[in-house]
Length: 306
Ligand code: PXG
Image 1 (tube, helix red, strand yellow):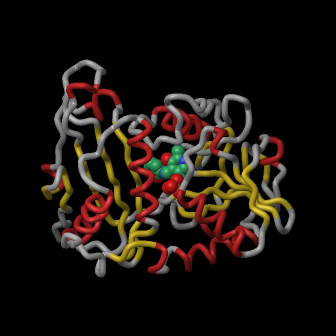
Image 2: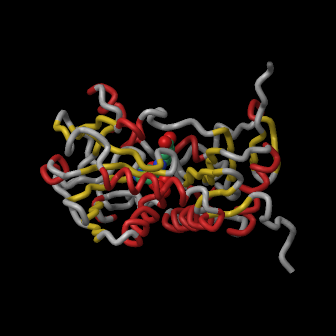
């Protein structure tokens, strides 16, 4: 059976995946000049879509990248991409680049940004078993960039810092790597946020000042923790504290919520998925399918508002 070819949204038009291309003069390619979002659709509902679209525009603002369409139009582009491709459970990539310019780094000549929406069926980040068995991670030598012009609060197209950390983790044979910030405190993994659980009622995660991306899953899990009666703190975490935590887990759009059972060879808790992590996992499993947590592809009105 021939596999289906998905359509990609490029600057307002849909084209087959094999023909979806950008210019070699696009500054997204030449300089990593642009922003993006990774989003998920569950059973026809795009989880936290408004939050993702909002973060995209905040990232763009920080790098002074003007997006020529409104947030409503961007939302519409996402919904239409899913409709055109008839996808009910998908991973989406929303990309806005500085657009075509010349071979100079100066963005002045880039007058039209490139807007891309890609949607494909979802594949699990760490494999299906990760939720049951947990993953083995380790501290990598690549440090998270400082909170500076290249801060990872901006979800920019420059992921070299994360890629180097991922290479470190691959070399070490771990499922993922935990980066420390420039001070030596726990930051995040290349593509997910870190949480630890202390005792029976405290959940801690590093603050944005530790060089992290303020993850949308992170925010949602923090709220979930508070709703379930836990104390949820944003606080600097030392590697020592993390290795000695009772439970550790990671969060991200693609990864969802993944238990960690060892860090750099140190067993976390009892070396299996902890009871609080399990509870958060179960509750998150309900939230992600709740239509009120996102934007419904079927009921979203794409005609112009009057
Ligand atoms: N930190 C970083 C640096 C990220 O890129 C997260 C945390 C989690 O944030 P959300 O908002 O998704 O809860 C991310 C986002 C991939 C992939 O291929 C994942 C991300 C980015 C790029 C690629 O799994 N995660």
